[in-house]
Length: 226
Image 1 (tube, helix red, strand yellow):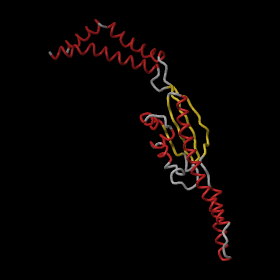
Image 2 (image 1 turned 135 degrees about the horizontal axis):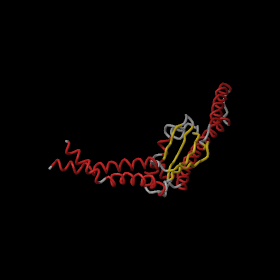
Image 3 (image 1 turned 90 degrees about the vertical axis):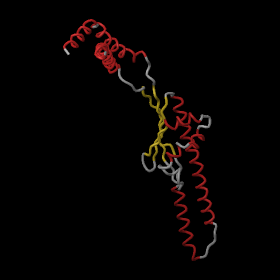
Image 4 (image 1 turned 180 degrees about the vertical axis):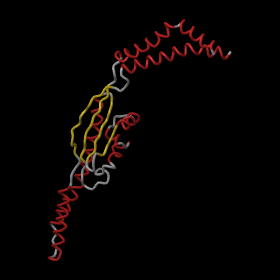
């Protein structure tokens, strides 16, 4: 054991310059390197939608809408020029959260600002367009029912029922609501994640110490093995 310590001490003394320089060089490299490489920036576009109310099982449900917006069929409708592999990537980057029973937040993140805005705008505008169409169809059905009932001649005994049905239909008509964008689309910018220069410098030093330690100890290990 004493001989091993002596040999290690001699090897350390013989290579002391490299043992000091390797951690120092790697530490400096770790500190300088991040300043020479531009951090990749990420852009996140966000929009808040108020869900409509016209008794549709999907477009009026904050539980179903996230599934709808991330479905292949909807994404192909919203982004018809995108390839299947690009749609799969968009699906991964798209986040749909239920903020309340009537509010949904949509967000999309990408490294290209223009693409970030265009993708989220296509998704939200397609949803609102489809929602408006469904809303108008439902409203038209209610309006026709009201017109038909108002033009219907009934007996004196049925007038009360007619007025009650008309009241219910008109009340339903008043409560119909299409979806809308509550907060306009906003884009925020964030620098790419990663270690700070100081942390990378410390990591470089630790790696250098490890290399130096291996340089001193490994030869002794092989010497003992043989």
